[in-house]
Length: 464
Ligand code: BG6
Image (cartoon, helix red, strand yellow):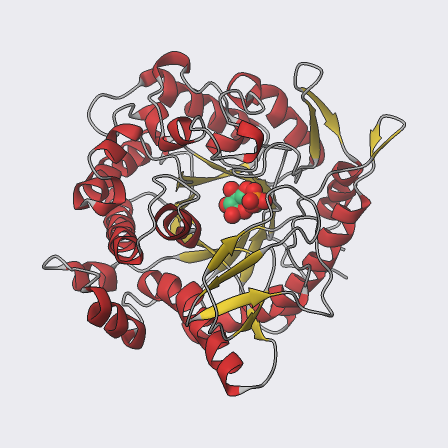
């Protein structure tokens, strides 16, 4: 018997920059990723999303594949500069038409759209004005959100404002590996505050618009385990929880920052700086649901030694991944752990535990698992893509969700990452996640993987 509710949504996810291509088609403006990925040395072997998997031109074929797989919901993001090329002001009707047609195609196949408004591709024009460090970007986001509600709100019920603040702010303003390539934690904290303001403004506008739907926020779910029970490792683990979870979830689920941590950033750097009314704005506009993106856990130790931000972008296992900040914490290899080629630990129980930790801290907020998947170089045997490791990964994580539901969590949907092979931001096209393979040597032809048929079955049997 299935442990999933009858109305549980079996979905899959993508994001605009990673699939669409058409980077300058039909009046689209440049995004920060269009510019950044063309700077030498920023991405794996110079890969970029100029063409991506050309979903912009092939969405009908892709939606037909979704329908064949039996998908009940599709999570995708809108490219802000495709609909507002300069970030605000003049609307690009061709961009609106693209999303309108995509939504209609999904609905024709009874696939429920879930829209993410911001999956990292800020209009470059807004970055030129200072991007998320400027409060005016939050106001531009409100204009963009209102436009999308007006054009798509009668057809789309599930909305998320932002995807993974920890990644686009953390990498954009602390490690510098995402645009705008800054390394300054004080600027990160202020930029992050403007994202929360933008979110709250967009939630308020959503409710004012009367759309019969729900609006939420998508965060990384990253459980931490201390390597040892030494007090310094336990303290480092608690700090990682505070930064990666409490800092990013509290403002959207409780409407306030975690007091202890904010006292520290205020003392150190005088940030975040609030405008009058920000407190009330956050408090009055908490989410209808939370989206959780779960891939891995991190094992944590104290870090008296040095800051190292080295990541594995090559897919060569154990190729020197080291991440940590001197005096705070570092992430180390779990000696018992099972790892992917990109050194991400595969730990399904972390999904159950993480969901239950969110429930314990934030109460009965509805949850969607908005991403979860295995990045791998898939084996091809006699022309077939035999992605058994992906099937195993997803099977174990579906089971982990079922366990959380049995323990009382209100999980309403599952969106594996990703529907189709796509561009991994810093890791190129060789890091595959999809149910559908894209042949880059043969005109981006689509091919169903073994996992496609497996997931078709999962959906048919409501997770059994
Ligand atoms: C999430 C993002 O961080 O993880 C996706 O929302 C991303 O856009 C996914 O592709 C997997 O990460 P990566 O680095 O392997 O592409």
